[in-house]
Amino acid sequence: MIPKKILKIGIDLDDTLWDFQSVFLNFYNEKFKTKHNSKDFSFYSLEKFLNLSKEEVTLLLNEFEKHSSFMNLPLVNGSKKAIEKLKENHKLFFITARPPKRKSSTKEFFSTHFGNAGKLYFLGDSSFPQLKNKGEVCKYLGIDLMIDDSLENLKSCLSLGIPSFLIDRPWNNFEEIEGIKRVKNWEEILNLINKNEN
Image (cartoon, rainbow, N blue to C red):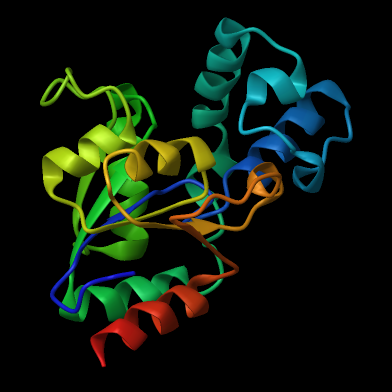
């Protein structure tokens, strides 16, 4: 699946490097006295899952960004070790659908945990406003492999011939697509990449 060479690897942030949905839902539950669980999160859409408008979700995310838990998101198990290992032999590009207005807080959090492992790219950023999805961003950057938890993001990569690893999550386990490799964790990702290096 992956050619033997120094890879340009694209890596998502939320729910790929660190847990976002579960922490946001805890914030939401605390605010509205609800009992939502990330294991029940069957859509890759807060709007659908919480039955809210896009504007309402945007306001909630803006409020969440100011909450203490936003800058204390727990890392996905094995992500830090995997990034340290991958950057030894490959070029890493961190690509997020977070809006550019969250660039400052995102960079601060990323730098705290992953140092200078690679540059961050924000979908919709003014540096490439014409690019509409992660597949187009990956093509623009020359990415060889994309790692994400969003099936829709990886479908856009697949349409442009970019192979990918889909990190298994409740919101993406309803469909299997040839050309998108489902993985359970970062250990499996490292094993698959190392297998193609040897």
